[in-house]
Length: 250
Image (cartoon, rainbow, N blue to C red):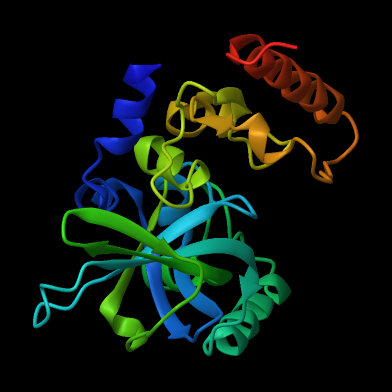
């Protein structure tokens, strides 16, 4: 268990989170609640997909203010419209009318057109911000300030960074402690073409503290046959285990 705690806490968040292999795009508009991103098919494929509901991190990247270490936590919602979409759609329709191949190895698109067609928009909700205070990494569940959209680069959260996000705790509590138990791993969708080969996501454990649920109303939501009953079983097992460890016996 100590290895789990060390793995989660011993992270250089602002270094490991900005892995260029996980770059997915840049915002073209941003406010206190939402960010719209420019993404491309190449970037999406490189990071093994961007499922709806997945976590992204928008890191503030201004060379004139290197002392600011801040990253906005984003959650993917839906596609968004780009200012150039009407032109792209018009061109695409003309290709369709001319019965030209626009996909596959026999594509008749020129390189420039194929490049332009590969871009799309992505709408994300801003859940909060990670920032550094001294040597401590803090998380706020809102946005104190935001800068011009071009100052941010967005990366997909995976591996240790994703494990830190999904196991974020209030105060100084650390996930994976003595009274916490792994309830499962991160899974964004029922479709698993990318997921099956993406160890950076499917091996990320989610821990719970049964004490957070005891004596409280707890609701469990999910699609049919996605493990709700098994989750309840695991929570009960964890609660029984806490009782077994308690020094106060009835």
